[in-house]
Amino acid sequence: MNFLTIHYFLTLVEERNFTRAAERLHVTQQTLSGHIAMVEREVGMKLFIRHVPLELTDGGEVFYRYARIFQRNELAFRRELSDVSGSESGVLRIGVAPARGEVLLPPLLEVFHRRYPRVRIVLCEMANAMIWKALEREEIDLALARWEEELPGVSLYPYQEEEIVLLLSADLYQRLPGTEEERSRVLSAPQKELPVFLEPCDFLLNSEGDIAGRLARKLFREASFAPRVAAESEHMATMLRLCLRGLGAYFCPKNLAEAMLAPSDMQKLHQIAFTEGKYMISFACHESSHRWSMIENFLKIAGK
Image 1 (cartoon, rainbow, N blue to C red):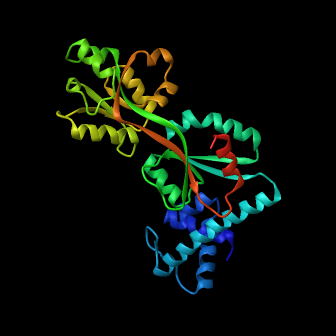
Image 2: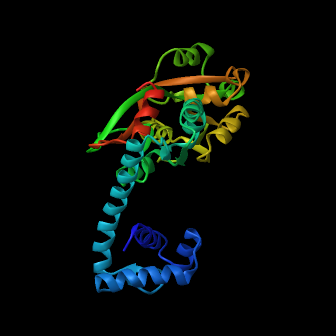
Image 3: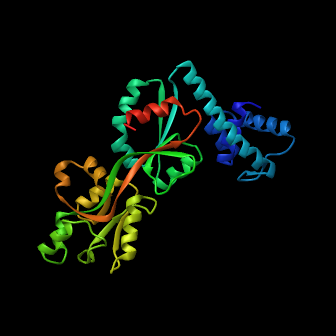
C-alpha cells in the first residue's frame, strides 16, 4: 500500500464508478482495478460492493475514514518537508464565491505569484455554504467568506466589511408609487424592512445559499406584501445587467457591484440599504501545529 494507491481508492469512492474514476486519474480501468484488488488482498476483505453505483462495504467505510486521515497527513508531511527544504513550492487551494473571487482576489494573487512563482493556485469557486463544508473536510487550505459561526479548529482573519443593498434602475424607481419625497426618505437611511412602495416591483434573486439571497428571502418573509420574483440566477454579472435594464430590483453586495459595473452604470442605479445588510468577510484556515508557510505568506499579503 502506498500514497498512489490511497489516492486511487479515494478517487474511486468519490466517483462511485471504475470508468469515471479511471478517466479522472488518466489511467486504464485495468490499472485502477489492480490497485484496488491489491489493497483488498492486503487488508483481507472486500472494500466495495460492486454494483452501479459502487458502494462501500462496512470494511470499506472504515478504510475510507483512515484513508482520509492518511491523505491529510501526507499533504502536511510534504508541505513541512517543503518548508524545511526552502523550496517554496506546492499547491494552495483557495475557496471563494465566484463574484468575490473575481473582484477581490486578483490583486492578492498577482503579488503572491510574483513572490512565489513555484506555488500553483487552485481557485475552488462555490457558494458560501459549500465553502464551509469544503474547509471542514479539508478540501481547501484557505477560504474567503462570511462566517456566521465559529468552526472548531479554524482560525478567522477579518478581511473587509461588505454591505448588501437593493439596486433599482432609474426607470424602475420612477415607476414606483408614492411621492418623490417618500422614496427619497427611504434612500437616505438603512431600512428594517422592505418599503411598502416596492409592492408592484419585480425582484431579481440569487439562491438561498448566497448571502444576498438569504437576506432577500428573510425580508420577503417579513414583508407586509408578497414580493414577485422575476428571475433567479447564481451569476451576479448577469443579474446586474438585468437590473440595469429595469427587469427588477436586485439584492447585491455594494462593493462587488461597484467593481463589476462601470461608474457611469452605477450612477444609473438607486440603492436602498438595510439595517441587517452589513457583515464581515474573513479568511479562514485550519489551526495546525505546523501551518504551511505559503498559507501564512498569503495571509501576510492580504494584510492579516
